Length: 474
Image (cartoon, rainbow, N blue to C red; front, side, top):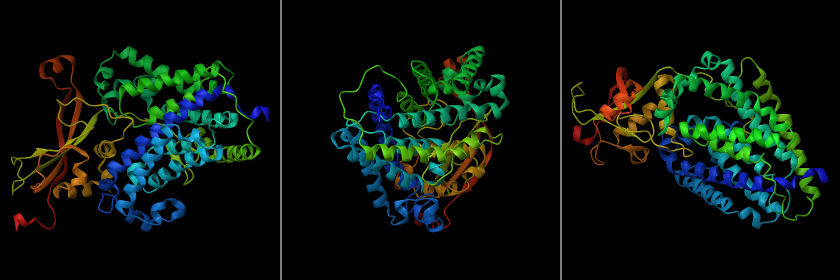
């Protein structure tokens, strides 16, 4: 079938595939380095406890068959190795069917992690990676030109990511309609980056222009993805520029980077593929069957997208094949942070020697400037932002965090930038307090060197100790 492939998109496919492989690598690396404290057998939300109460059909995962920390570590590091092989182009060295199977491996492996990841993995970029990773299986390698229908499905994903985000904003917080949300967003976003302070201090008229441009990019430009070239390339390029702007303004895991990768598949780079044979019949049949499946599964995401009760980041099947997306339907006006402290004193008075735990990404010490971590994702730091919004968000895991800090748990402390207590001398008590944070002004920054100013609000958790005192206290 002459219409089945699009040779001019072979370079766009190559860029997309290698970018996706890098994102897979980052995702598996984060799982390997963080899982023990979060999901391990002694973690805050242990996988064995989850699989014991959740049927396989609701969360298909290899960990229903077997779980141990050693097995999870081997699984995640194997995912890293497979991803690295794909970055290096190993799929191009295999026959078409072999390349497809190689791309299927990281998808299956990461699905197993996400489906037992619970709160730590309950975000849109996880489903987006799985949905896009599934389509990548059928995009082919150097033995065949890119299939038009798979390129269409990738644009369909990109459309839902952008248009869904645009709709949730217009239906949600009134500040998006008033063009004022960026008066607050850069200060109150979950994990600011090194340039977020400067973005916040841009003139308010420029913030309004930014919001208006965002509405155009998310509500108008997505429709142009399905128009002939070069219009579709212009549309994809505008989305890439918008996503790179967001990369500069904050830490949003790999959400922006995977959106850029998908947009690259829609760019016509004007170079034809090297001579390749026609697609084999079996491949055409498989690709068309998958296309029909994805279009059929799109019913619920489309229904959600056009609904007045639209919800963000919802998966409608346990394989995360077709999902709904969206971000920042509401924007906080005030930033709160949970500050966790410990003391070695025997009596936890207010004037005791309380020492603050230093997290890697979330704001803490007002003088410490935020760092760039994305596309790497700091899962504990991200959830701490939700804890500050409401203690209910933290109820399943915050007590486990405190317990592990009281034990000086090595795996938990590795998630932090710095613990104020020696490894052999854990604190007697740990407490948490809620502070209001705001960016300093230019004058305050020059005078104090601090990018944040914080004010105590209230107690978040009273001083707490282990139920069974350590030997030194007996």
